[in-house]
Length: 531
Image (cartoon, rainbow, N blue to C red):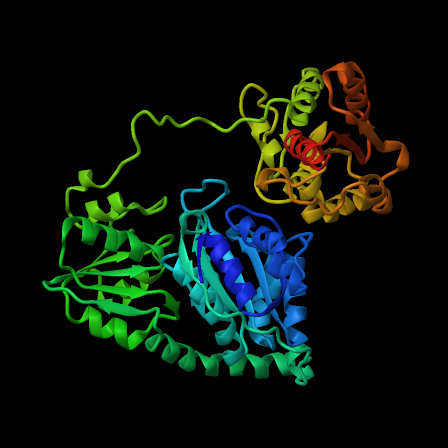
């Protein structure tokens, strides 16, 4: 069966066809569409696949690991910075191993289209010493996902599938395969290996080391690693989507250059050695960090390799056919560039967004203070750092607004104010608030509750309707948990509440409640269509 799919959707469909029993994820661009596809899929509903959102990537990964322990196949999805949050369970699961197949899809974001950094998740795969798969197109994304579950069960290890933004968010026709039945419930009988006390952990770690040779052997024989023949002394080693860019340039300019394609890691050592021995000038094309380029230069020396380290390819940002063409020293004008009429524009808060009225109120109160720092967090409200508001002073990682405000208060800053979204608060803000309560820190936490995870498309927010009770349960005094509705008509009242709580010498929480204008518009449209 053929189907036109985004790369993210191809992975989701492959997981359904591959017999998953559950998908676990926290929304994060460019990975969100994987879980959404499964949630909306009639096949997913028929197969009773568990698919609701998790509170954060750590809880998602550990839940997927628990399903694997029970013998069933599970998929866990996140963006690259989400793997930082899940890293504890992820790293230790390579020591425990898995039972049912477990594939972790990590969507990297070269050029930082919607992210804080460009980190390359292949480094995490090498760090954990597990197999990494890196598709070059949508069909491979489908095929590798299914293969990944088989590989996971063969090696009894989690498998990391890495995709970049361009592959996740572009479409192609995909050939599907026959659906596989879900695994039967079959909890692991090797209970000792799942208990990482030092005695069992040392034994398991030795087992992981012993599997490395088998993993390399599988890469040597993988259908995803192959050589495209050519002539001359120049050659290319291309990884993942970089292979697509290289082949586009080769076809556009009718080049006859040999290419070694690698999409399964650890790298096939014999294949790479044999290929590199043949050529004196090799361009290394990998999307992300120069992970393999560094290894090759360390092994063979710097003389024959070009890539991101020597400037043949840009050190930052995503690759493209034009970038590859320039590195291959061909005129790239024949490859379509972005038309000059397409002008970039900065992101901005939606017209009618509740954050606008909240920032107006905060700015008015802050006029009375010499120190006007407002600690921000990850979400669409981070755009409050830009004109015309310029309210937000920091944005580092999920949940950091509360803990940074606490640290600033500890240093003597008054007022110490932070803004955090509803989804981010339940993701990783609650523990920071507990720290502040325990230390009786003089901070004001503003939870901007727009009733959804807005930045990634309007997914459910884990704490909706319960934020007052959550804050009270964490120990915030009830009198200092204030509710406001950010509307222009309420501006004077909201300013008065903010002033009062900024001056309070303890922990206060202001919950700014107003539904996201985009989800409100969607819900009204759906209501109209059903009437």
